[in-house]
Length: 508
Image 1 (cartoon, rainbow, N blue to C red):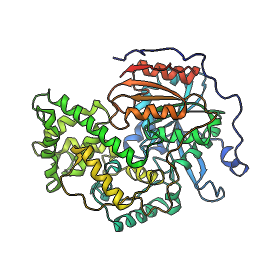
Image 2 (cartoon, rainbow, N blue to C red):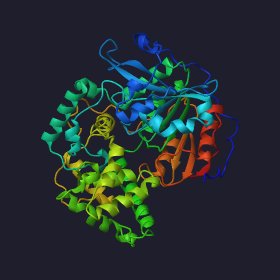
Image 3 (tube, helix red, strand yellow):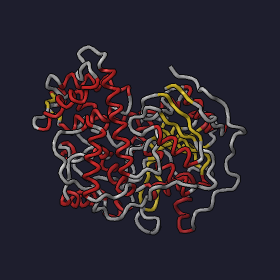
Image 4 (cartoon, rainbow, N blue to C red):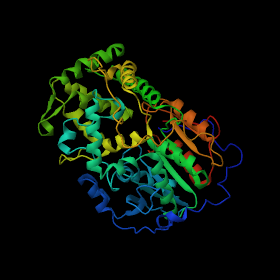
């Protein structure tokens, strides 16, 4: 049941949007800013069969927006951004632009799967056109970031980037960037896949949608993108909801290590809950749950488990750990993890493999989305580079802080997968600091978020000079998921520019 805001109302008078109009776009970009989107059916925007039926719903409209691949060369190559619109049920206040995070999650698909039902009854859906935009390189936007064939993805060619994965050599990293360039349309695509270019795209989208001020909703990585946009275009912001936030002042390794500790806390909470379940595969003593988990998954390094219900596929060690780690993003997935581990104890990997399939966009026909590759490419332009010594030390520390992910084998020298990327990172850290003229923003952070520590939300709020809504829950992402306390506070902010007072909380 949804809780109540413990401290409600507004902190004094409702903050107002900026009185001065956004600066006009540069003349050389006028042809992009002056586009008028042609909205039509969304069927051709679906990137896989499961989405095709959902996208056929006439309630959804889709269009494409052309943007420069390189904003310094506006007469050169272009990219096309896919947009999906769920029209407001009443006269709209404006558009609410949505980024699903990841980075690399397709926003159009996420909007349909996760938010459409809620928007049909929520005041936000009444007053805003909800416009999901597939960030450049992701989803139905083109060119797409693509590094591997489906067969290679099936063989663990790419694993969840946050986890470091197997140790890598310099030769493998050179091959990686060459493969990504070949599959994505060239080195210039890889060179312009970061958040700086994506933020400039968002400003084009804002203008194309006819909004003087951007209304934005970003989750997880989407909070990073929102902060970058706030830094680059503060005068163009009306409202900004940042859910599951990242700290813009935290260095790359520092962020990875903080997330490692958070994931271990999430695993420990899973173990404590599981200990109360009959036949818990992690045992009845939560203090020994990591050891029990190792007993279940480490043998998969030599002998993968069979998955007869999934056509005879096998569950590898990398698959099992990725499935569990991703399941920790929400406690709603905990029962599935427990059942999957119970099944694994009998020698079968069907449930954990099916859980992983949902996260990595594996479709029933055996094809994959490009989420993990887009995640890699975007992060290679946003993250700080590490020397082999720094990367190896970081991996060892990551496994110390998140021992449930430790494969139990020595860490030899490993290397930053981005070391041979065609350009240096374009996002300086820290970013989004001391922004002048930014209207009030709203950060929504959960106290037990397993992926982005609660302190990140506090820090982002302070950096943006915004307002924080605390959610007492163990979840990554809280907005528009049916909690009336949270959604009412967000709707009041988006519609009426009313922000919660200091100390506002919701029970998740």
